[in-house]
Amino acid sequence: MFVRKILIAAAIASGLGLGTAGVVMGLPGESSEQAQSAPLERAPVEVGASQPAQETPPRTRTQTASAQPESIQLAGHKGTVHCVAISPDGKVIATGGADGTVRVWDAATGKATRKFDLMGEAVSVAFSPDGKSVGTACAGKGGAIRVFDVANGKESLRFEGIGRGGGGLAFSRDGQRIVAGFTGGIAEMIDATSGRIFSRHRFNNGGATIAAAAFSLDGKLVALGDAGGQVHLIDSATGRALMNLGKGNGPVTALAFLPDGKRGAMADGGQGLRTWDVATSKEERAFDGKDPIKTLALSKDGKLVVTAGASGEIRLWDVASGKEERSFVAPNAVNAVAMDHDGKRLVTVGQAGSVIVWDLTRDEKPLPKNFKLTEEALTSSWADLKSDEAGKAYAALRMLQADPARSVPFLRERLKPRAERPDEKQIKQLIADLDADEFATREKASKDLEKLGKLAEATMREALAAGPSLEAKKRLERLLGLLGDDRPLTADQQRDVRAIRVLEQTGTSEARKLLESLTKESPGWWVTQEARIALQRLELRDKK
Image (cartoon, rainbow, N blue to C red):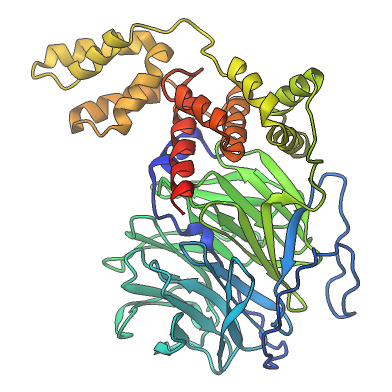
């Protein structure tokens, strides 16, 4: 289960692009017919509509699925669509597939803006960190890594490795390097401008294709997943192999580093995501779903992870609690998924040219404009916010957001401090003493803070986030560790976090005032932290 320190790290991380690319292993042999892009189809996806006989039968809505989001289908691809990526700013979508094309779309309008013709199937796509370039890996005899300029449509790089194409692809965080996977268990690190090889790796994996790739947030590590079910971790600067995880359930088709950089996650066809600790290589099992998982994506802030696969069921999971937040159904199998920079939009790709953009902020059947919450509904919604059942929690969020005039005052009363607050001045002095010149003073301050325990937690976390000296940082981390830093959020804490999400998505002046007050006085550090981040996102939204 993902733990709460990931939530803290996610809050201060910036530039996370892990959720913007869906990478899947190539499926050669589909039709490579070239097609001109068609206009955007505005009709919502019709779940259960008939499909060609050779395609996987569509899924119908299940009893566990939440309300379907509004969606639009982008028409243009022929045959299976293998991969999708969203630019770091969320404005551009890139897709590639069996028809031998990479297509670029305007995310706001759904209009096709570019079509790049390849010599083989496109099996992975990725944007450069500045969003100006899109790279693709092609399968088959025409296999190569190609990079195109999004603005002018010109090819800026073509690289043919010693193995055939058809593997994973990822840009480094500075945009200067590309890691690319090939057949024969080969991966190469190349210069994104010149194509010069920095390092080459041939893994002892039975020649399985390197099918997925990801850089860590700081760019120091590269994870490579192969079709044999193994994950290889290498040092991006030296090229030195660091670890090799054993075989999983099947081919590794998607990889991502979690925001704290200490853990990675993979999709390999199992019903739960395989996760591992980067330092120890210890494997964990974070999210246990009901269907095999083929693809995953992380939101930029690291709060949500999306999983999907052959069943067509799309699931959104809360990272902090490890609980399912929401689920809905695509009309057929999902090969890859990408989430935009603010977590409001998903793009899934699959069979029969399927490219679907889902608006997570709107439902196909929204609540009435004059919807009013009764006292009974407010109380039951508050209770359902901490439910482990995704449908209940989502329904509660939906209703509270629909009637902010009643829900905001209601939440104000329930997000008040639940215990007598300690002497903040005393705690801050003790924290300052952690960096005192005298060793005895530092030791006494540590012992006193340890005795205060939970009462000092929020203030210690604030001090740690402010960037203290190395000595104070080590002591604060130890003290917070004694409080059980690795424990997941409790049900009550998870309810509070979801309540903050209601206030942010409501965005009214009263909701913002409440968020501001919660940054100063709240039930605990988890609410203070969430309220602060919510306000930052609202400020960014206002500037757009």
